[in-house]
Structure formats: C-alpha cells, structure tokens
Amino acid sequence: MNLRTAARGFVAFLLSVPALQGNPYWAVTYPSSNICALSGSTVDIKCNYKYPKGHAVEKKLWFTNINHEPFDLKDDTDYRGRVEYICGEPKCWSYSCTGTCTLRIKDVTQRDSAYYRFRITTNQEGGAYNGVPGVKLSVTDFQVEVVIHSRYHDRVQLKCHSMCDFPGLTYTWYRNGNQHHGMSYWFYINSEYRVSCAVKGSAHLHSPSVYAPETPSVGVTPPGVIKEGSSVSLTCTSEANPVAKYTWTKVTTGHSPGHRIEGQQLSFHPIQSSDSGQYLCKAKNDLGTKSSPFSIDVKYGPKHTFVIPSPPGEIMEGGSVTLSCSSDANPAADYTWFKDNQPLPWEPRRPYTLDSVRSKDRGTYRCQAENQYGYLGSNSVFIDVLYAPKTPSVSVRPPGEIKEGGSVTLSCSSDANPAADYTWFREHGGSVEELGENYTISNITTELGGNYYCEARNAVGLQNSTLMFLNVTATPSSPSSPSSMSTTVAAGTVAVLLATILLVIFLWMRRKRASRKARGQGGRPDTREESPPCPVYDNVSALTNRSASAAQREPIEEQDDPHYASIHISRSKNQEVPCGFAGALVESDHTEQVLYSAINLKRPKAVPE
Ligand SMILES: *[C@@H]1O[C@H](CO)[C@@H](O)[C@H](O)[C@H]1NC(C)=O
Ligand SMILES: *[C@@H]1O[C@H](CO)[C@@H](O)[C@H](O)[C@H]1NC(C)=O
Ligand SMILES: *[C@@H]1O[C@H](CO)[C@@H](O)[C@H](O)[C@H]1NC(C)=O
Ligand SMILES: *[C@@H]1O[C@H](CO)[C@@H](O)[C@H](O)[C@H]1NC(C)=O
Image (cartoon, rainbow, N blue to C red):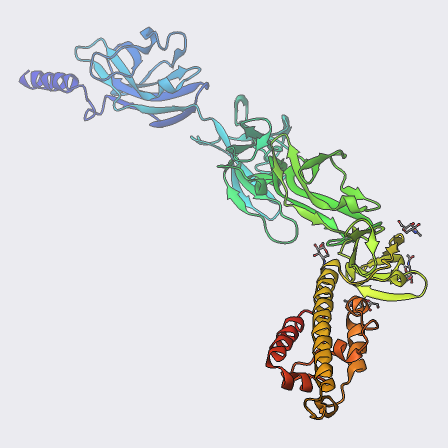
C-alpha cells in the first residue's frame, strides 16, 4: 500500500514535472526535429507518442507556446483553417500504447517559423505529456535560386538551390518559360536566355530568372545640351541577374587604351570641351557582357580665333589672297570680317578672298568668330599690297615765271609701294638723268628750258610722268641778281666820280707845272718816264669779265689817258704806289693821301664774286 502510494506519488511527481521522459511508458518522439519549409508550401510535422496501458487518451494537440498552459493551434486564429491533425488509432501492447499524430500546416509563411510540440492528455490524474523541446520549423521566403556551380571558357554550369534542401527535393529547369530537363543547366555566356528553376511538383516555388545583362541605357543629368563648364553625370543602366557591374571607357583612336572608370556613374565636374567623344558603358555579370556607346558633344563658344593669310606676307597688286578665320567652337562658328575695324560684307562661313588685290585693299584685317555660346575676336593681320608707281605728278618751285638765271626745283611724286625711286629726264636728248625726287636747276638759262619728265620706279614696276614744260624767260639786261647789280652800279658811280675828280686835279697840276716850266723854273727830269709800265688793259679786260655792268658803265673810252682808269679798277692788293703815279706822289704829299683813300674805298666793292 505504502509502496503503491509511493509509486503513485512518484508517478504523480513524474507527471507533474511534466517531463515524464524517465518513464518508459510515456514518450513523444519526432522523426525529424528540424524542418525547413518554403513559404507557401504545406508542412507535415510528424510525431510518435506512447502512453501507459490502461489510460484512455482524452486530448491530443499541437502547441507552440511553452510558458503558459499549452494552447491548441486549432484554436489559434493565426492558424485557423490552415492546420489539420492527422492522427491514427493508438495500438496497445503489454504495458503501453503507441500512436502517431501529424500536424499539417498549409500555406506556411515566415511567421510560422517556430518550435512545434505535441501534447497528449489521458483520463488519469496527471496523465499528460508534452513532447518538448519539439520540432523546429524554418519557413523561408527565399525560395529557389540558380547558382553558378562551375565555369568553363564559354559557358557556366547552373545549379538550383534552395535555402533548405530537404531530402528528396528535385528541381525542374525553365528556359524562357519552357521546361528544360537536366540536373543542371549549361548556360552559354552571352546567350539571350532567361533561365529559372523550380521545385519539382511545386511550380509556384520558382526561382527568379538569371540572364546576361541587357543592352544598357545611358541617362544624362541634367538632360539636354551639354555646355562646357557645367556638371554632368552619365548613368548606365542595364537589367541583369545577377546584378551587373559597370565600367565606363572613353573610346580613343589608335591603340592607346581608353581611360576606364568603374561604376555605374560617370561624372564631370565641370565638363570640358576635351571631354567630348565616344564613351562605352559596359555592363557585366557572370553570364555575359553588354555595352552601349554614348557620345558626349560638349558645346562651347569660340576659342583660339586666328586669321591665317594665304599666301602670307606681301601681295603683289593683281595677285590673290585668301584669309581664313580659324576658331575652335562647337557648333562651328560664323565669322565676321573687319578691315581697319570696319565690318566687311561677306558670307559667314567662307574664307575672305581677294581675287585681284588692289592697292586700296592694303590694311589690317581681323575676324570675329561667333556661335550661340559666345564670340571671340582674332589677331590682326596686315596685308601689304605691293604695286608699281602710279603716274607721277610733277610740280615746279617757285611757281610762276621762270627767269633766266633763277633757280628752279622740279619735284616728282608718285604713289607706290614700296616707295619709288625717281629719275629725271629731259625730252629730246636732254641727258639729265638726275636721281632723286627733287631736281634743282640753279642759274637756269633759256637753253635749259623745255620738257622734263620723271620716272618713278620700284621693285614692282616703273611709270613716267607727263611732260613738264619749263618756259625760261630771257632777261636782256643781266643774268646777275638785282641786288648784286645795284651794288655794282653804286660802286661804278663812285669810281667814275672819283676818277673825274682825280682827272681834274691832275690836269690842274699838270697845267700848273707847265706854266712853271714856261716861266723857266726847274729843269728836273720828268719822273713819269721812270715809273714802271702799267698793265692797264689786262686789268680792264679782267674786270669786264667779272662785272660786265661795272665795266660797261666805266667811261674808260672817254678818258684821254687810259692810265688813270687803271687806278680805280685795279684789284691789286698791294699797298704800293700804283704805276704812273710816282711823279705825282713826289710832287705833292697831299695828293698821295687822296689817292690812297680812293683805292681803299673801292677795292672790296668793285669785285662782284
Ligand atoms: C624734296 O623737296 C621737298 C619739298 O621741299 C622736301 O620736303 C623733300 O624732303 C625733298 N626731298 C629730298 C629727297 O630732298
Ligand atoms: C650764270 O650763267 C651765265 C651764262 O652761262 C654765266 O656767265 C654766269 O657766270 C653764271 N652765274 C653764276 C652765278 O653761276
Ligand atoms: C620712261 O622713260 C624712260 C626714259 O625715257 C624710257 O626708257 C621708258 O621706256 C619710259 N617708260 C614708260 C613706261 O613710258
Ligand atoms: C613763254 O613765256 C612767254 C612770256 O610769258 C610767252 O610769250 C611764250 O609764249 C611762252 N612760250 C611757250 C612755248 O609757252
């Protein structure tokens, strides 16, 4: 009895410590304690239970909570309609009874992931048993995926994989939606197929498709025209699974490899004109590569505007010259031409051409390049037009009548580039051939009158002027200048006056001496015979040569003694007593003084040089 009570108490104890695991008559076991399920699928959680013979089963239930009184899943609103117990009739043996009970959960979700426990209750006191810790159910949304299993040069081997590969799970392949048989799938790199797999028999347990990148598209931010100096980003987008990796490359001519930039975006902060060009966006994943070209056309105002003359340098008149305006601009610039800062009417795109250059085309040229993004002026180019002298013009100085003995200057001038050299000619045998633009004829004579012309000559050519007639008026009086003539006349008058006075004195003295002789006084020889002979006529002729007017006015012929004329026209510089005067000087000291003063007075003025 005691034993029984003790045994009972023990049992009760065992039961109340709900783990009756030590008791061989109670047991709950699970064929698998860890179940992985795909969301949406139906899960069966099986258990085997055992209870002592003689007990009558009152309740079998599945529960998840452990801290409180087990709560039947069938009564749980979260599982309502989705759970089902599939339990067989228990069989009894010598000491115990055994049975199975399966929990079926339909359409599992991730929220159903939990530990599931079976509980059996009998009609005996303390007759309850919890099958702890239970079965772990993991529900995953991530259903099936294609994985790259191995790689060959032109293909990859794909395998299907799910997070919880429960035993016996088999897969089906789909290529572009059509079923494809095989354990794995051999994907040829860059082929166009989309490949997926699914759990066999559960078409809804489908993996996402894998495929090579599609042709990438390029987006530009900000959209529209790309202006130099702005910030621009290009974004490459390609659909691909697995997700593509992107590379940007600038396409360069020749063999030099383009600059590579990893990443989906290609950014320019700021963009420059040199960034214009072809770019390649490449999207790559394990199944293939696709690229798209994209060209960047950076717009900018003119830069580096130059005038280029062809041919360069000096242009011969009549030649042609082409001025090209060159400017770096996008879009191409229109040009405006200027000559000496005046705009020239010309087509905006054509080079400025002068087919037959004229002397008036000489000047400074420049151009201005302009497009919708700006304008820029060029350097200036001087176009020098070389031309033969134009018909020279001749002028005469001084103007008016040309008098014999006067001085005349002829001037020749001609428009020429380079400047002309001048030569003077006289028409008909006049071998003047004087060089220089000015030709001065001093002391002109009537014979020098006539037609003159000049020749202007430079490297390009020569040109003669028209004839210039010099009408030299003869002056019958004297070719001497009026001023020197009047001086001579004045000097002559003085000389004549002096000569007359001297003559009068001489004659008076002579008469006086004669009258003395006649009175018989003196007997002295005449000193006049002892004086040297005078070169009277030589001196006179010399004088007439030098000053015709003075000589002519001299009343030499009228004098009865030519010796006296020689006195006042002598050029002799010596202070000696002139010839023929010795007697007179001896005779009178007074006379001597008078004579000397007369000579001194005359000498500097009587000779017109
Ligand atoms: C020629 O005469 C003009 C006017 O007097 C003068 O200006 C010019 O310098 C002269 N030319 C030469 C080469 O002497
Ligand atoms: C001017 O010419 C005349 C005649 O040829 C000559 O007699 C005279 O001495 C000349 N005068 C000068 C200043 O050269
Ligand atoms: C100009 O005159 C020179 C000398 O008389 C002559 O040789 C030449 O042919 C003339 N030139 C012209 C263009 O008339
Ligand atoms: C030269 O001038 C004189 C006086 O003015 C005039 O009588 C004569 O006709 C002129 N000669 C010529 C060839 O022009």
